[in-house]
Amino acid sequence: MHNYIQENKERFLNELIDLLKIPSVSADPSFKGDVSNAAQFLKERFQELEMDRVEIYPTNGHPIVYAEKIVDTSLPTVLVYGHYDVQPADPIELWHSGPFEPVIKTTEIHPEGAIFARGACDDKGQMYMHLKAFETMVKTGNLDCNAKFIIEGEEEVGSVNLEAFIRANQAMLAADVILVSDTGMLAKDVPSITTGLRGLSYVEVEVVGPNRDLHSGLYGGAVANPINVITEMIASLQDENKHITIPGFYDDVLEISDEERSEMAKAPYNEMAYCNSIDIKETAGEKGFSTLERATIRPTLDVNGIWGGYIGEGAKTVLPSKANAKISMRLVPNQDPEKITQLFKDHFEKIAPKSVTVKVTPHHGGEPALTPIDSDEYRAASLAVEEAFGKKPIPVRSGGSIPIISMFEKILGLKTILMGFGLDSDAIHSPNEHYGLFNYYKGIETIPLFYKYYAQIKK
Ligand code: BES
Ligand code: MN
Ligand code: MN
Image (cartoon, rainbow, N blue to C red; front, side):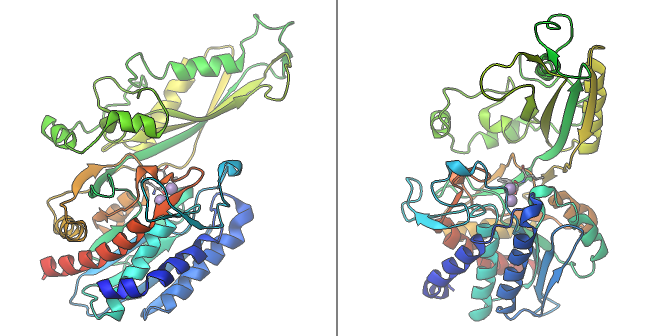
């Protein structure tokens, strides 16, 4: 298989480049045609792979691409999940090259080159590794498991139509394990497997004061300013220890044992390098927890955007009529996003002074996920990564969210292996997102080993 990958290296990369040229931004309706072109592109690439079945399923939003190859019903079945949609490219002026004009450049971390484009790592590059790994297995006669692929176009907007699709197609999606590459690893020479994801509760708040913008001289001092109020309210949601003050917020948090915490602390980590990589002088967060813990096993509350009043040039003296903010709460096992959203809403309404009215609007959320490490699938993944990297992978919890993972477990009763090959420095969701060529090819090499070990263990 190694030879096949070497011989087809260039083409594997060129196909990914073609996919990256399609601006499949799911959040922006003006890209709807491009999103469906990306689905069509994948359908065609699957059709070149001797699949038994390839289909595009339209949804109320963006289409789902499905493909399968059943070699032998007595073999275990791997269901691969990934997404072909990407985040918006904004702020576009901060890109050094066009977000949809992929280029290969070297970086300090990727001296052998990385491909720069929106979606390079999240998740087109990582998802496409699975097609090329599958191709490698088929063409070299090494496909040890049945394979099914479900590639969606709405992950970055909350996978809103995927749940219904899974519910309606349970027989078609029947499998033994779900395999996903949409997360990261600790470093190129420190392989890891993600064993947990945070959930998400996302709300938008509006604070309304007077019925129109007022002269800040005539009214200032006598009428509550919605921006002053919203900032005070938001500030009060965390105490001086950066503990979230919403009553009941921590009730269901799964506290992890000291033993697991000390296991986690063994992951190589350098606080100074962390700070330097994002140009900050020191980290900040909940008292009593390490940086790694704060970013993975602890829940958070962050303002993602805040607006109101006059932000144009010069000084306009205005006491604005309203202020808004978007707030995300990253959740950990066993917090329930709907419950947390309700707790937030009740609390935010309660702390509002009488001088304003507040409105809380929930957006999409997602449940946290945990994967056991004493399972057949984890053992297979660990062996695969160990063989490919020459080092046993470290199990690590991640701070990001992939809401559909908990749905797979609830609806299909399947556990997921989060075998991701991205790096934190790949700048996913940021300008100049990229994906290392080393990581791309290493992923293509590792995936068939998972199939191999999984089939062996399941025999
Ligand atoms: N692939 C990411 C999530 C991720 C990245 C998990 C790195 C772990 C490590 C995914 O595409 C993503 O961005 N998810 C969103 C949630 C979604 C509801 C918009 C997120 O985490 O913000
Ligand atoms: Mn992703
Ligand atoms: Mn993403």
